[in-house]
View 1 (cartoon, rainbow, N blue to C red):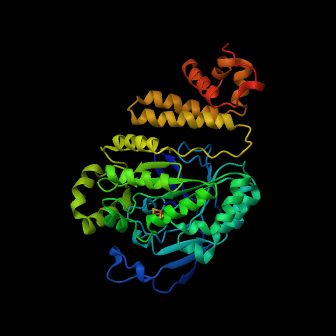
View 2: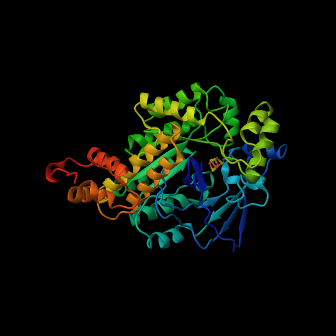
Length: 428
Ligand code: SF4
């Protein structure tokens, strides 16, 4: 999956848009990739072309971490993806660097100077979670993801990797070292399992991505190494992924392979990516066409109507039954002085998610979100504020009124370390 993304809309991964256009490309034509004979270019197979260039920037920065992936920065070494998933949102005009959307899986732009740019950029920003790593086949040739992990380790930055390839295991040594020094999470994009009812169609939808059983095997190794790992079930394709058997099997396989969460999001379709995907349906899955046309009328982005809430609530239930979460546990650097603030923000974000699924009114959702942002921005330890000033102290934080102060106080009491050395929180 974005195997190069950050994530700043509900359930919608967004590719790092950092690039430069000032490029002197070096084109390298690889030997014919027989497996790359794809429907949209059949009957002729195409060669994968690698274009190396030196962008001016690599790091995409955000004011604060998002409430899904908890990522503050993103930096990725390649544009285009050899996995060629047919639904890939990276074909959207704002992310796709090619004039012809069909080039997306066949032309890979390689940011040759990515490691150097990353070193320079990270040395100028506060330490926070970095979304990085792209393990498509190009990585075997260029090794840029590994070099970027080396820099993250050297500078003490925690990393978050989202992948469809088990090649990420090649860098297990580095990921372990980063986990020990800062923290690391490796998520696998998985939307089905070998037990799924629509296995054949979903395999076709995922293009040349390695089979899900390989991703689960990699998940198990990462879990054994003590690295936080789990499933990012995005996109949940209507009529193919949202059935009970598939949801059950994804949760079961994740739990059985040491994954700690299954986080799901629905399909988005925009501009040329939408046209491309409807072309796929027309040619390969014509029986699905009407349903998708109804769900995604012209001008829509997410589905106009769907049983998404019902699907997400069922997933929540299934995760609970298997002792895992339907949300990514927030990666926090050990010893972080603001760990309690971050845990409280995470808990508020999780409450917002559940409120959304249960149809809570927008003004309530926004009240929680704004309070979470304000707490994220609060430099002082929330526990200290509460110990010194009680609930009134919490109310002094922007966007935390009396009702939310009570909620936050409850969270502090539930999440703070044992109070033996702290005295009893007062409720002044
Ligand atoms: S083609 Fe597939 S693996 Fe590659 S970025 Fe898109 S969704 Fe991820």
